[in-house]
Amino acid sequence: MTPGGTEAQGKSTLLAVGSGRGPAGGGSGWLRLAAAAGAATIRSMRANSPGPDLAPRTVRRHFDRLADRYDRHAALQQEVGRRLLERCGFSRLPPQRILDLGCATGGTAAALKRRFRQAQVIGVDLAPSMLARLRRRSGLLRPLRAVCGDIAALPFAAGSMDLLFANLVQHWSPNPAAVFDEYRRVLRPDGMLLFTTLGPGSFRELREAWASVDPQVLLPHFPDLIEVGDALVAAGFREPVMDMEQITLHYPSLEALAEELEATATALLIPGWERWRAEQARLEAAFASRLAGTRFPLGYEIVYGTAFGPREGQPRRTAGGDVVTFSVDSLLKSRPMG
Image (cartoon, rainbow, N blue to C red; front, side, top):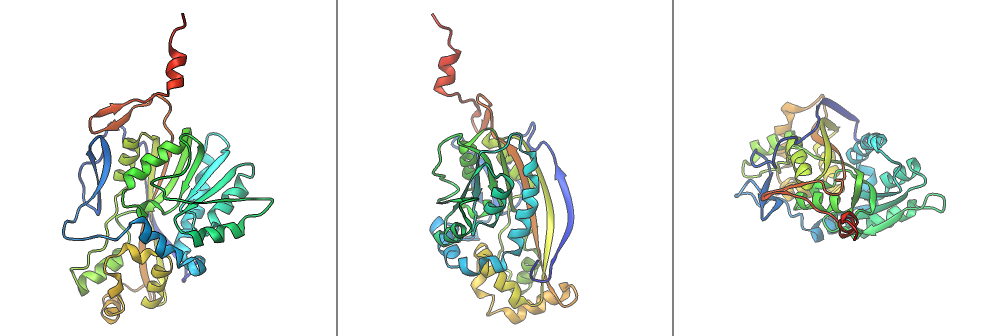
């Protein structure tokens, strides 16, 4: 992997997340799960920090202008995508319809098509220029469908998908809880959700460097795997399994580190990032004590999640209690005749 390889540091696993627990109501971090008006919502934990601008139009604009160079710098995204692909074997039935959510240029969508040759693979992304790259990967033998859309408002029918694959996309939404609700809506009963997202241990080195340069710059804090697991349970998913690993990338210079963050739009997640060049010399000095040899490290905590779509009649946890839903057809079938 560029630049200069990756180093995996530690891994922990949490099974059967959320059994006997309600939605997370506390804890530190940038995002906090709360119950309001009968639905899980996300709110900022830092009143004095504006946080990143994750409005869909902003995210679309940034990714749209990066398509030409994205693949050359998306080392982390590509590696985590490969690791997530290895978990597709847990699917209980061969999927016929697959969504690759936040598909970018389509590398993972193409890999999913190679693995599930009989399935229809649909790449979904906010950025039209990314989808144009995906279409170039498509062919007569392994066609890929491209759909421009928001993961919080997917243009697909309820219960129409067998496998949802969402690699490092969840943290791009201003309302991750609503995203889980939308995933649940489009996933068929017993369909499989596979996803990764950033955890609270991400950007630690950059966070510490900025703290010594300007304590007013607050980098984002992401929900931990327990909070994310509780959100899955609150959304009605079955058998969620969460685990985490720390991946550290090493860069030959702070300039190279910054270039990769900008070329993958990751810099958009860091409020005040536009100041980094003005503070480059001071940041380099702050990084000096953390250098691995002559390289600049930056760590990412990757949260992995696996869950299955709820069966009809399965309760869904809300602030007002458990809610059970049934289709009209199933109710009519259950009524005695005569």
